[in-house]
Amino acid sequence: MVHRLIRSGAALLLILAVGLMLHPSSSADAATPPGVSAWGFNANGQLGDGTANARIAPVAVNGLSGVASVAAGETHNLALKTDGTLWAWGDNSSGQLGDGTTTNRNTPIAIGALGNVTAAAAGNSYSMALKTDGTVWTWGNNAWGELGDGTTTNRSTPAMVIGLPEAVAIAAGTGHSLALTRDGSVWAWGDNVGGDLGDGTTTQRKTPVAVAGLNGVVAIATGAFHSLALKSDGTVWAWGQNSAGQLGDGTTINRMTATAIRTLTDVSAISAGAFHSLALKSDGTVWAWGDNLGGDLGDGTTIQRMAPVLTSGLTGVIALAGGHTHTLALRSDGTVWAWGANDYGQLGDGTTTGRSTPIMISGTSAVSMIGIAAGAFHSLALVPPPPPTPLPTAIPTITPRLGYEVTVY
Image (tube, rainbow, N blue to C red; front, side):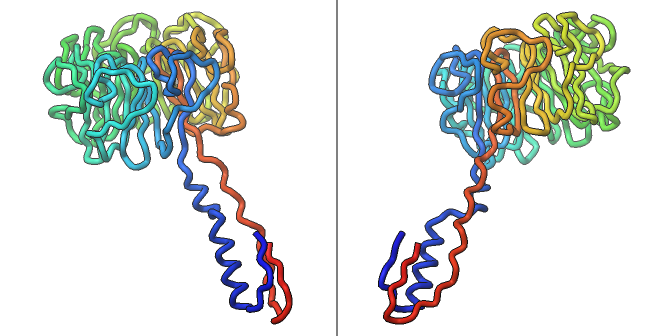
């Protein structure tokens, strides 16, 4: 902008101030909220890009900003915003999007009945939300009582789980649900055919029951029909179905109560795929066990493992996510790595070639992702805000002399 014939020092100062106000500050830009990228299978609109086309590299989910975390179900997703609202997209055949319909959505919609949400979890065809008051809310498929509302009736809007102490974390499987309560105990409900609930029985439960003999828990995870718990001492405990060795106890025997994975220590985080399990150690290495048909474990083989093995060539990891037959890892440098089956492009490397060792996902080295989630055959990553816009170069103070022309740029 150019201003001429300024004959007053006071007028010059006013123009300079207005000029600076037209440029957004770097602190405002730094608050620009992140969005979500998605790739892989998309027949139900689970990539949120407005289409049903599979994608072999990341694409932006339409219209999402201000996202704090994401969760991926079999064919639907949830995004928790920083304002405590929850958004959903993808398959809605059982009402798992929570909008009062069973209409699929290929772009995100708000779940209007929910607010003050602090965490979300997506199961096979149902959803969970944890609110700031410690209550847990569920909706979608309820064939096995996984909604925990005392019925087996599907819900297309959220309903509160009955009889649950104050919760601090949640996890959703194929047909069973978990909640970690403030006292470090774990509660479970829903399908129990393989001992999924850890209560010493195989009885289906429509309301929560305590997992037997488990305390001091700091994190939980669910696979299709098995469950994991991380204790404060860095040990991992598992229960439920064990047909692929996903419990990591060296056998393929189902367990109806929690059993320790003796070969694992110093664990800082856990995750589970459908039939495989994952542990992140405090040294940034990844350990995996269970089904490996698609290279899910990342050890360079397709051999099923009944005890944890080291995922090849991966260090500096800070988060993990397990899909049906693929796995994601987020490194401290913001890159996302993937391995396992890749039939629909769920590894995001621009191909449909399966990988039995980790490979970096296209474009993540330039963006530096801050979160991940894995669905059955699709993947999500949380994208950071753009870098701040530099402040304009400081303009030197000019003291004009009356009667002279001054040009200000």
